[in-house]
Structures are given as C-alpha cells and as structure tokens.
Length: 193
Image (tube, rainbow, N blue to C red; front, side, top):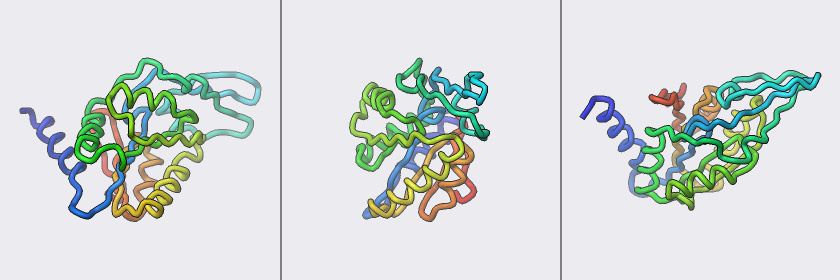
C-alpha cells in the first residue's frame, strides 16, 4: 500500500469517526469538490459581451457593477467526473452514518443535477441545498446556512469540505466547524482546523 493510500485511509477514518452521543454534520460542496463538470458560468458584461468562467474562476471572481452571471449550463449535469478521494470520504461517511447528517451545499440555483449525481452513486437520501448565490456572496451565505443548521439541528460539530478558499475561510471561522479545502488531489486545513 502506497503512503498516499495509507494517509487517505487514515484521513477517512478520522473524518468518519464520531464519538458516541456526538452529533456531527458533514457538508460537501458539489462543483470542483465532489466532481468536475464541463458546466460553465457565463459572465455577461454591461455592454452585453459574454465570456465563460469555470467554477474555480467563478469562486474567486469579483463582480463589477453592471455585470451579471448566466448559470443556464448548471441546469443539467454536463460530463461529470468524480473527484475520487472526496467521493471516497463521502461514501465512507454515508456507509457509516447514512444520509441523514450529510448535506451537499452548492451555489447552484437548481438541485436536479446534484440529485442525479447522488442517485447514480447510490446516495438518494443525501440532502441537497442550492443557494443560487453569486460569487461575491457565496462564502457568507454558506457560513450563515451552516450556523443556522448547527442551531436548528443541535449539532456538536461540522466537517465542511469545499474547493473555494473564501468558503473554507468563512466556515472555518465558525465555532464547532472543521473546514477543509479540497485541492483535487489533496486536502488543506482551514485557518481554524
């Protein structure tokens, strides 16, 4: 067994483990965290010029006055490619704890393609929450959602996985949250780990 495989197994065991009587929520982003797709966001400028942005570009884009985003390609699942190690984490959490305490939290505005992905992978009961938020507000909106969910669900802790630095930093500032940045082939701890 390679050292990378051994580290991944240890990491999965750590993330999946939950002490007796401890209530934990696992939150996964979708695009560029659970899978890569060929869906693009289009930036439409004030003069009507249209150019495409990949999800990673969108996550760090600072919107200017007069610009708007066109999310039409996110209404379907275009060429999904799972990010294998994150899907192994999701599968391990699902197999150990079921879908009740797992949420896929996405900036997408429509949950259908995410449900389709989860159904294909045998996890139809995982909750999907779509926020439909812009790049400038996604981090705050996700952090607010996690805060509300902790309060409403009585969670002792949250494991939050996302590819966006801004989202991970915002969630990582919250009490009881271990925010982890997904970097496709590895993991990065948040400011607060």
